[in-house]
Length: 323
Length: 297
Image 1 (cartoon, rainbow over the protein chains, first blue to last red):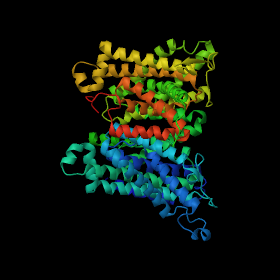
Image 2 (tube, each protein chain N blue to C red):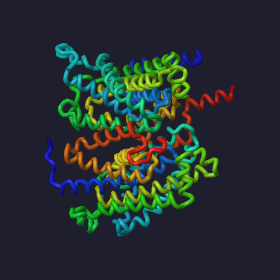
Image 3 (spheres, helix red, strand yellow):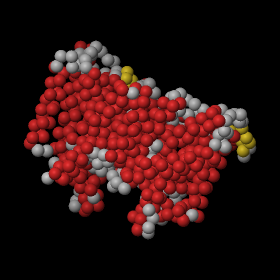
Image 4 (cartoon, rainbow over the protein chains, first blue to last red):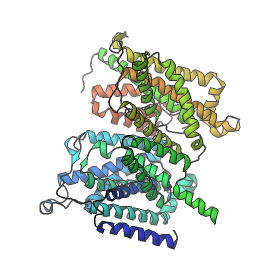
């Protein structure tokens, strides 16, 4: 990224961060719109890490998102974390970093447990199928979890008075920026180079002394961690965590699509893709409410037919051609 | 310790499981063909099955055409639609190195079809009720539903025709060659686009046949298709990806597993156990349970 575009990025983030102070902005429609863009951008980065940089197509992001959401809801509704502090500070679980990190951690542990056998045995499409199966298994387990997971209904977080979307917005923005920066730094490290080497040629990477299984599992776990934290954030927004809502396949399909439309294996691609695709979906929802999922389906098809390499690659190609 | 139920019940369970599983099987055969040549997980297969079911329903209630007779319409229409879907949507993506693109087009198509069905027919559960829906027949000394048995026959006939096509015709041979090694097949003068389009045409016409079976047996709604796609994938993995006979056998096996789990454990765990078996087979026997060892993984 050039110096100029770094400055542009800093200015954009600063403007977004200050936006909630503009009078009336919080009540405006685009405020919640931006919150969802941040959330999807984080999910898209998560998928991009394992699939875009790591080359391991995972179809299980929704499982990790749901694990993070459930972890948060369970910790919160059962008050497993803060004990008596909860009585004096009824809002202590809101955006509590410990709760959110635990959400990510549970997802990451699950990713290691399932990733070790899957990634050592399965390659390519078989791995993708395996993660899809894993997602369905997790969902069934939570439906049958009895009182602990609230069964088919799920868990309602004990929401106390909390009437503004501002903190959701800031935390979402912060997460989006943090994941983008973290992945950017990661990809410039030895580990990132190893990950790309594994993606491009696993045999050669292994011949050069890279422990390919370790690298792949670490990327899978990192991706799950990000998704888990995103799921935790979503719990603070939706309060009701149920198997059909947080394990919905859309939490995997939409981020996947946003990443591909934006550009896989790039830092800005997932963010750009989340913004553009969510804008298209939302616009369709407002303009043609009865047909909006039809429009969404059409958009995916058209985007793939005409932009198969994603928007970031398109601009890179234009730059190379122009140079 | 579970007491073993009387043999009639076991027989009944097996029969119902196998009959229901054959429907997964016929969906899996279509997936298998498409996966074989294009290496594409065609997630929209289930949505196409439900679309066919709605089409059958419209033919029955609109024009009074018997659901089983409508096979004569649905299957050829499926061939044409499959051909068109490939030429219109997947032709360009098939040439791409990046297979995410075709996967996403399949996802987009699934969204599109699901929601078009909702717009046209509403989101409620629909079904086809004929004079023989409730009638049963005697099979192996066990009573079973007539429509399920017909569904089983359709699955057998569909798979049988596909196998005949693959084994006995030169085009079928080309499809088989392409699924084994597309590069080598292309060097031998086989056009990848033609075999891909043929695989798609047959795959979608099989979805049509499965749609007839679904329409006559189960109530369905526009979103019921996805679970069908997943079940078909499980059947595919059980039978060995790229193995047509195995796909049908995998479907029947999956039906049996489901029936037994439902009876002996609980209905709520059926899916988890089915997918658990799926993961284990993927990991330890990726070539499938029914294939000979020379098959490549």
